[in-house]
Each structure stands twice: as structure tokens, then as C-alpha cells.
Length: 162
Image (tube, rainbow, N blue to C red; front, side):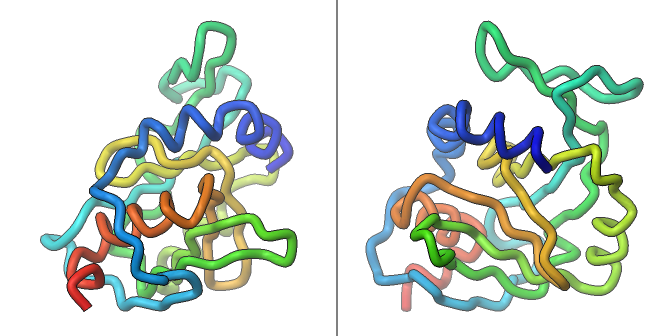
């Protein structure tokens, strides 16, 4: 977790720029809850195990000229594990996407050792390298409300039509 937090502070602007998931939507989606749709709708959601140290079997992902993270070949959590998706803020005003997980998703995350962090992709694009487990949820930090709304729209397209 500490690894992801340090990298997140340095690389978050790059990660958010890479996210570019969908057109921005300003509809007051903060703190909204949406049921995750069937997998054929919306962008893919994948959470991978990551490390700033070389891990056998992990792929190298160059964040910039000086930083590389190593990401598991297969995601720990996929869209199939989602039950809800929320756009939330913490008491310090930071913006997160909260993924509600089914029991299989919770179990998969619980098997990840504390020495690892997480890399989250939306539609195949890196969205965040800052993620935390919280009960039946997985939260990943994003730059701002606009980015969170774009991610929500990409994952749950019909929400933008409401």
C-alpha cells in the first residue's frame, strides 16, 4: 500500500491523463451509486497486483523515464466481480471511485499480500496506481470530480443519460 501511495502522488497526473476513458459529464454524480451493468455494456474494469520492485512473472510498466512498476499478468478483480460503483470523497476532500465487490472479488483481494499495491485500468487504460481495500469495497483515487464522472460514464454509460 505504501508503495502505491508514493507512486500515486508522483504519477497520478500521468495516470489520470492516460485514463481518458470517455467524454466528461458534469451531472453532479458525486456520491452517486450505480449498479454495475452486464459486462457487454461499458468499459472494462480490471484491478491488478502491482509492485515497485521486480516480481517474477509480473510485466514491467514504465510510468516515466525514471519509474517502472511491475504488474501481475492477470487481474485480481474484473468487471464480473462488481456489484456497484460509487463516486465518493473522503474527509480530506480527495476523490475516489468505490467498487462494490461480490464475495469472489472480496476473497480475491484478501489473498493479495500487504507488500503489494494495485493498478486499476478502465477500458484497458491505466486509471490509478493508488488503491485500498475497505470491507467489501475497493477504492482507487482519481484526480478530481470531472475525472471520476468520466470514469463513471465509461463504466456505466446509461448513468449519463439520466
